[in-house]
Image 1: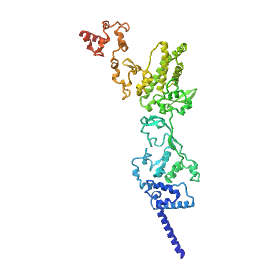
Image 2: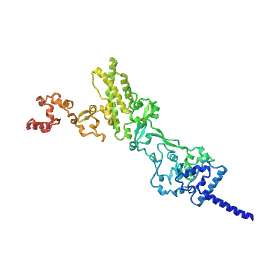
Image 3: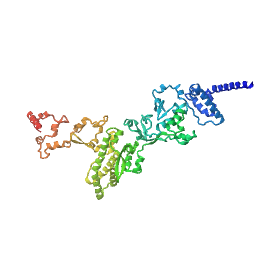
Image 4: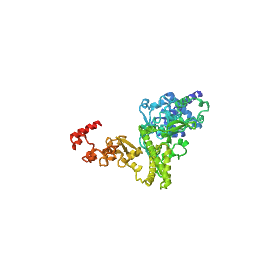
Length: 573
């Protein structure tokens, strides 16, 4: 009789205590009862989810999901009191629980900003296969940080985007997560804007050589922390990800080693790859690029060197050549490479630079050889070592100044100074030239690119136009527009606009006309007007300005019949 009474009472008591357990354990403060849960509880309490009960997320929806959660909790409590609990806690949160608050349709609209700068779209990551894996909400939202109970673990993003890929070709590319900075930044103390390079479609890897460290591989030891069986590692990665990521919500870092994403190595001007063939950092080409190595010439680094552009930044074209009967691959550069970074037309500028240096070297070659021989015989007070070494420096570089155009011109200018010093002594020459630095101070904006323009002569209306003599007294913008690059003003072609402001010797510019008029051209006789002592100005000067006479101009001194006779003869000619 007693047994019949005790059994129902015990059943009622067990059910009552289980009910109490169920009701008490529904309260989030119950989780704080175990010391291993204190940090998790405190994190939840200080997060934006502190108004959401633990069971709303950690139990599956419905009665059976609720009861499953309670029995799992009971099992964990028994383990805790038995002292065999897991130190590394893991919870599985069903995506349907997230959807109770975070409506799927709302997540699919627009994008969110992660870490204040990375544009993220849920629709590209959720509810679809990515690299053969279906991600769950918890795949990304698994981090516990101050103020956030389900923060995004950025290490997961890096592992997914970079594992099994080249560092320069992550999933979605570099711009899939973050574009280049819009603001001007400092690179080794030099102001640098990404915008121009972005517009020119320069690849990120041109400067950012290595951006990751680590490969995210899975080592056997990590599997052994959870699994006793060894054959699990032989399963294909899609199967393993579906089990561990999609179903069990295991964190990526529990299996994968870390991949660090940062600026591991930037492009340096003196690339280690170049040093393999060209030696250390003291090769001739490198010294010219750095702006050192010439005697008595100020150190002048090339702007590309200061910006950190490496040798491979320009030397991108691979060419096969036979060297001692063996095929060798050489990485060369052509002027067309300039267009890739600087825009259309810069290849022409490079050609002009090279022609300028090549022509200067050619003109100076004979002068150098002559003055050195004379100096050896007459012992002229010249620095012949400077002339020989600096001249050999430029010739041996073989880039025709392209490695550092300003420094190349400065070196040649310094050689010319020494040559002129000797020529003045021996040939009684008093030629004095303005220095490149003084020219550069006048128009730095133009001459920072148009080096050697002072040595160039162009044909304008069948007359030779010398830039050097004009740069002495004029600036570039007197003839060329700075707003529209490359535009030459129309009135710049009218020499009279400058040269006839002051009446000068006509012979300097109008040599053929002068010789014909004065009877000095071949076997010509002087013109009758010349014999009558009529000067150039008598016909060409009008109201204190020099102008070309009109057809009826002769009538001012001659009869109309003279004009008709003149016009008929001109038609015959």
